Length: 434
Image (cartoon, rainbow, N blue to C red):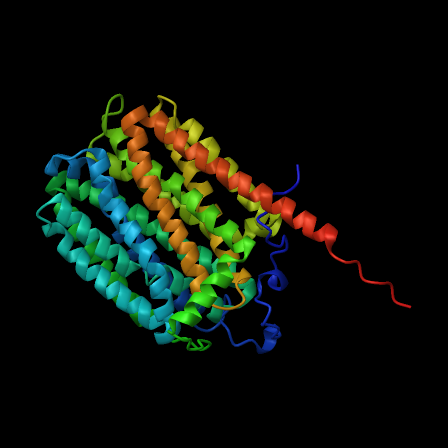
């Protein structure tokens, strides 16, 4: 079977990963690399930013049964506390990326975290489901300044050969934030309720934000861009006209549909018969996010062995196996299914997002912003559709939605493989030297 493709080059070394404009020998390249000055500080700072982003963004996800009970609403209505946050991020990530081109990556990331944690401290006092959804939407919009700016910062400040690993560490921070946020909220909510739980996440995010700002090295390779709408529109049109980038955007959205749907609904499934787990145990199930931390941070090595295209195939197959296993009536098999879903998702996301960063030759913040927008639109759609599917068909309905999304990933990747082979066959053969 031919390797999967999105049209991205198979080689993953420096030559394949580096933007075309970069041809600086490693000995004179002043950008950061593993073991070099500032690399550890930068990695830890962005890791903490990832922790804060996912902890805040999904702070209500593990608490949806309690939110439903408190406000007397259905699972579908409660799921909007997640969808509103991810939807706000999806809508504002492109404008935020434009601001980062003008004011700098570090400045915008800092401002975004300040606003997001401030709103996070207000969320526990929401008097109604409508107010809670509105606050979560504002919080998601504020967090929009993080993802695209972070990947653009890495593309500018880290050597191309280390880019996948560096982005993988940022994604790993996402997984730790998602995991710890859900576990902490689960146990805190079991004792003191969901409001105290989300307030605790807000305080943790404050600590992460302060440490991030103190640790992140000042950018050395940032070039100020324009805020003119015409320039921004031209850059966005250029990215949307690139078939490879569009395929990567769709892959990110579809992977996130699976992940968002599964983790929005899993709390309801585990709290109901035959499992009937208490809230603290349900929250602890999110320990499987540690698998995502490992798979995201090792995505670079995986791509080095089987190529970016092969990595996407493996991620899709792993996610599919996890979805099918989760249909079992055994708690152990359900948990194993979640492990595989998580591993497949984070590996696929790390490969797709890093491919966007090295494919875009200019306007990297906008290229990353479009990916993040598609990614979080997928999250919003997955959270809502997963909850609706669960209401209509139970867990099997949510799994069916996930399998449909994975089929989309595989289909797009296969289409990219064929497009790449066709382009290679039609390329003119250079004349032999005389």
